[in-house]
Length: 182
Image (tube, rainbow, N blue to C red; front, side):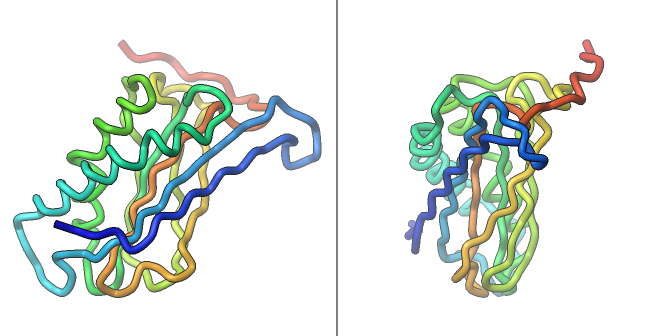
């Protein structure tokens, strides 16, 4: 079993675009969970302990994140920063095989792949978590990014897992949607 060292919640509300033009408010939320990496310091082919951690954290944190939104979620994303005693595959194991199902359940579904990012980094490292529309992967107006960090994590033997949602696309989006592939 694993223990979370800390959980961090971020809620941001965007009310103007970067030029100061008022927009429909966009609320973006992210949750970060910092926990000990059970595979730190060693190569393992069996990453299933990390699959289970991703599933458990997803069940525990996704609904809490969505409760911070003003409107229902329309986009989502996930990321992980692995401490320097781990490797990228360990971060991928936390966010890929089992995290998606609880994220989609909390969002009321989601047909599109959940955008993601993983990296190895030192304490205080930041990561760009990509957001994309939960049902339409070709909605360019929903391509967005949150730059996130936990100032005291990850320690070398920890992982920081992030999940995020937004209730709108970017402020005053003007890119539209690409062709929907059938």
